[in-house]
Image (tube, rainbow, N blue to C red; front, top):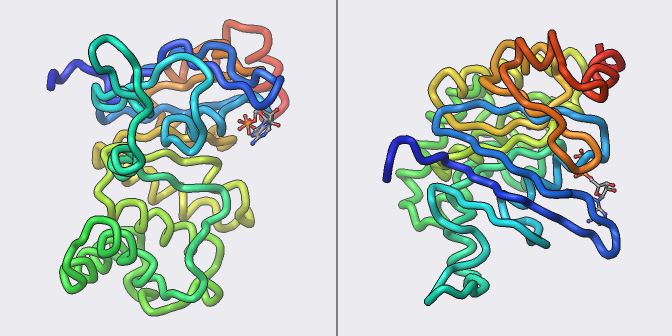
Length: 256
Ligand code: ADP
């Protein structure tokens, strides 16, 4: 596998919901170790694009490769065939996703939430998985809360458990869908700090966010979407401080 090959390559991605086209041909590449922030007004298709990368939605048109492998389809003798479920599950297991709502299992402790997928999906030995889960909870600053249930944790703590849970599958790519937008303002910082550490450790990340300071400080590249198209992209410094496009300027003026 060449070092130059992007980890994610999306070409002319189109998505319709019924008769409505919500993505009009998105091209995007994400390289290993890169942090890309997707910005844009609500309804511009950012979440849909993330969900397509993780095969939570199916493509209407275009192609997405992750680590050089076409997702959703496979090419055999020059023809595209829909992949088998087991194959899709394998592709998905390489991608961690963190949602706006934390979606933890309420009847399981923080530790059990983190242990669940490695044991049941990947067949990791429980004792080994628990050891790794403790390391990950420590990484997100929750070593002391391992035996707490979600209802006993703040929103920020629950989101950090959700990040640890995603990391437990040893993903090569992490997708974040507005991970702080359901949090009280005073809890946003602790989640962003964990994400900043992950980025610093070299994790490849695609982050949908309205946190402009995070995008400015952590993103290698910012992609501004509006109405299902990429309007402009570039270094945060360029897109956030000297946006070229009128639509980007109008959006930034509103969120600042
Ligand atoms: P963003 O993340 O930028 O706010 P979304 O990807 O959530 O945008 O939504 C893009 C458009 O697709 C919106 O108009 C939204 O209403 C529509 N949409 C998203 N999911 C569905 C769905 N499951 N069924 C129908 N329309 C959807």
